[in-house]
Length: 425
Image (cartoon, rainbow, N blue to C red):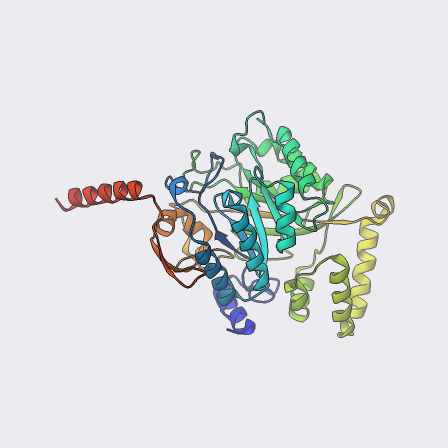
């Protein structure tokens, strides 16, 4: 399917929430797609989205991983952000993990590794970067019950260590943080850390507590919401921020805010949603292209603007505005300006799925049967991960994959049969 047709399909899903500044359907075919290469994890988070069976599920064959990556391209085209995730993907054999990343990059995807970082050593990250990895996303927060680290402030020590592991490898560093009742009051401390390390951190993602998977804490309290997290970010920034300037998917699901950091001060990249809409209309290729570095992006942007004289004055006005906006901070920072994007994800409770939001989902999981909304996948995980598969391996041979070891599979079957018998009687 041609990219134009894929964009039309995406826009069709977005029509009930569409706006000129909606990225999906205009410059992106999807926000991101997760490909889970293992269900195993070396932590047991209090708000874990995995199921009770996950730890026992065998890794899907690498040929099936490749097939699912191919499916990402088939459904959404190339240039798509694909999360190599799990469980924790670093628990997969590292030779296979490197092959998976290399394959994703070779077919035109933009691979990111999503990990808790425990086994993501510097040597492994170096090999993955050489294989084509673009982003490294570390999940660090107090739900993980790491021994000796009881607060988010203490966990900054681990975050700092992970930053150094990734420094200089050409990877965008992302931090995922689950926001819950017990750490909400520490959010300013976390934000300050991200702001102060914006020379390496490119994106800070905040996942609001949800009652799904094998999580122990249930639904979040009213103190945790899109609005309270936004207000806290604004408090750290010291200013109101234009959260509606750029839209990605359903407004109840995501909030996306690209900012600039100069002299430890936060400034929005763009504030005018009308301008964003017109930019998406005229320069969609700049928002979909994946550039090797900032210089390549600027070069491509200049070429694009030169082809559209109507934008010459606007580009100059924007540059002058940002220079005045950053003011003395730009001078003190000696022109060193970093980009830091804030992303708030409002995942749904398993028993409270809103089909309107599921239909417009921008965060999909690629399953054996195709893409599924992440919230729907987490709510019904066993339906997807416990499904036996017939797979063609790399040698062209047919393999049968049974997710659970034989003993556990028989036990599950017996329990199901017993339950069916009771219900029939």
